[in-house]
Amino acid sequence: MSNVETRPVETECEHQPAPQSGGRPVVEVLTARDVPLGGPRAMTVRRTLPQRRRSLIGAWCFADHYGPDDVASSGGMDVPPHPHTGLQTVSWLFAGDVEHRDSGGNHALVRPGEMNLMTGGRGICHSEVSTPGTEVLHGVQLWVALPEHARDAPRDLQHHVPAPLRIDGATVRVFLGTLLGHTSPVRTFTPLVGAELTLDPGAVVALDVDPTFEHGVLADTAGLSMEGTPLGRADLGFIGPGPTTLSLANGDNQPGRLLLLGGTPFEEDILMWWNFVGRSHEEIERFRADWQAGTERFGSVEGYQGPVQRLPAPELPHVRIRPRQNPAPPTTPPTSPTTPTA
Ligand code: MN
Image 1 (tube, rainbow, N blue to C red):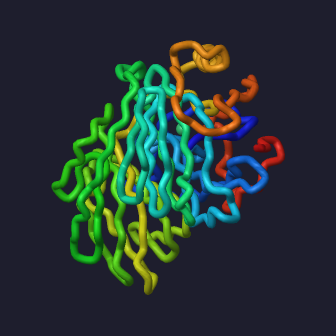
Image 2 (cartoon, rainbow, N blue to C red):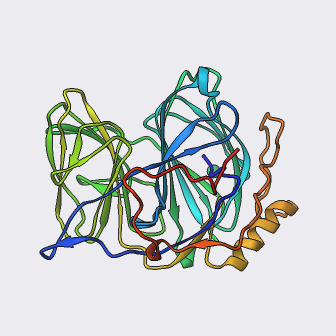
Image 3 (cartoon, rainbow, N blue to C red):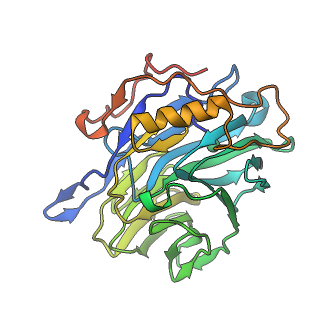
């Protein structure tokens, strides 16, 4: 999916120190803000990254959680061709199917349990439309920032269907990186891990993790906890490097589902605006101008059926947000009248 806010602000993302207590890393709970995706019957997504307290977990720089969404009332997903730079997108669905087309010539179906990772280094554009047969849409959209040496990586789409691994108390699907001795074949440019875990009712799992990674746990269901810290639905629990195991528990009497996201701390400062990741305001201005002018940087999408063939870029403001210099957000973020969407 895309950031379709019509008045996005530039967000400076940088690695922020992990909270500790008594020299040991402790869990920081990042709550989501609701972001309507636009249109009269629009879906609303729950965004946990970036936010003022934390903008990066490893190279993970954007996390939207949505659904389960009744497509008959929401209209589902229909995002016209829009651009990306400097990032990879990870689409992971729990329910529903999404048709993907990109300017790398790829036409693919995104299905539950199947990962699609799109690389849009120098520039790519793509469209995403839920299929006519989709009744419920439920999933996540994640972005990975590319490091300096890979920022101009060519357009690419990788598809991987991880085999479900059964461990005591949980079923695990490793879609990126290595976990439980299983390694995804999908190529990334920084050390990363991404996995879906479904915990049995009442299960407590001690998961072996890479101690050089920082980790996030995105809760898809209620009743989960991480290292004893409760996570509400759509919360993102964060913990810094150090632990060799993570304790994950499901206090509910239904199966509990979460995504584990991790990576080595990403030390480069990045600037995010709309659907672009760059390094400077001037660079973001150039990306925007190239998209508006239809230059070859982004190419074009073939076969998208819709009245809008290219999602126009919003105006680029001169206001920036520096996450670390802002106070922590309130527990329940207010709806901001300054960033309307349409
Ligand atoms: Mn997109």
